[in-house]
Image 1 (cartoon, rainbow, N blue to C red):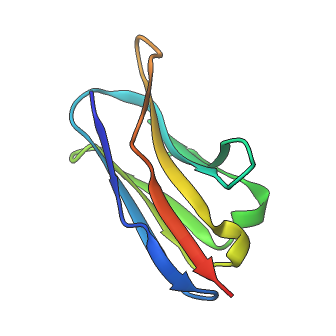
Image 2 (image 1 turned 90 degrees about the horizontal axis):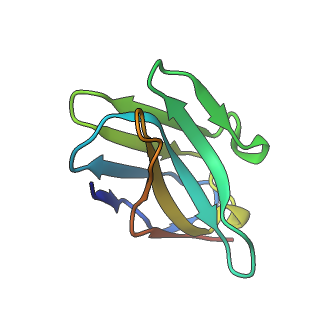
Length: 114
């Protein structure tokens, strides 16, 4: 199983970006996005389960939306009203539904300028 992430880049504060992650195969209990800022630990930003349940980190609620396409095996993160503190490397994550094995994408850099 490979997770291929895309969509990062440089944007001004208040702007938007959309991250996409495609899984090469597999069925997943949950898929999501983590962020790692310089000097910080990797933290969960948003996740979505196989039944569509979502979870967001408090600071992104109302600004970020996670979605999942089960037919394409993809998970997207729409990020609006971006702030400089949203900057970091964003990693796609997936947990297999039966084995509970975890998979990570390669990371995509998001930089929000003030």
